[in-house]
Image 1 (cartoon, rainbow, N blue to C red):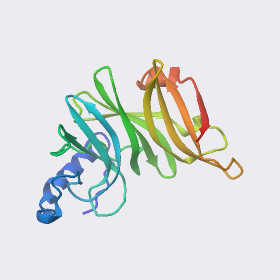
Image 2 (tube, rainbow, N blue to C red):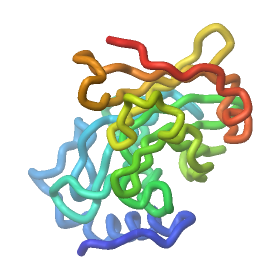
Image 3 (tube, one colour):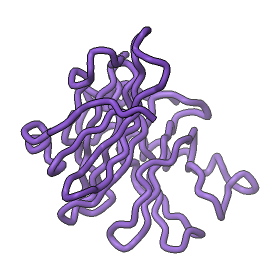
Amino acid sequence: MKTNSTAGGSYGTKIADLYIVHNLAAVGGNSRHTYHAMPPVGWMNDPNGFIEAFGKYHLFYQFYPYGPSWDSMHWGHYTTQDFIKWKLEPTALAPDGAHDGDGCFSGSSVIKDGKLYLLYTSVSGEKQTQSIAVSKDGVRFEKLGVVIPGDRLPKECLRTDFRDPKVFRRGGFLLSARGIHVRAGGGDDPPVSLLRSHGLDVRERSEKRQSHHPRHL
């Protein structure tokens, strides 16, 4: 079964979770790890947003539930308290919006004001942007939309290869770094773009974004 989850809201994650429930038994016995975290069904790759929040550790990961190959990326979600027993949580993100209909690519997470935020690369066609989702309980996430559009990049940087944000704190600010590609003739070293913000609220970021420039590795 392959499902196009583009209905908006939380509909995409609900479709994924329903599919998992109906197909979980297909992977069992000797094929199911009990010590290592593995997807309930389908495909997984990059771990994302590993963080301690709400009294447990959260492990998100790139996830495609509908087949054993890479496709439209979701964010799967496990929690643990001992790194041995892993609890499957509802799918955190699904590609169900106008800005991320072709994938919710890798990113990171941060706690602010008692809420858990996910900063991820949203993909629509060949366009990549950075988006945010938030949760009050660490289980159900609400998408807040695009906070870092590609048009804020320097002219020599490609808008089609602008992804995998890492958010961290320094000096009272939240900083976000991500990898980018430059156009032909833009240099041999792949740059990393760096943005600074006082907070994570969409309106606050648009008003207080203070710097945007590539830093070379």
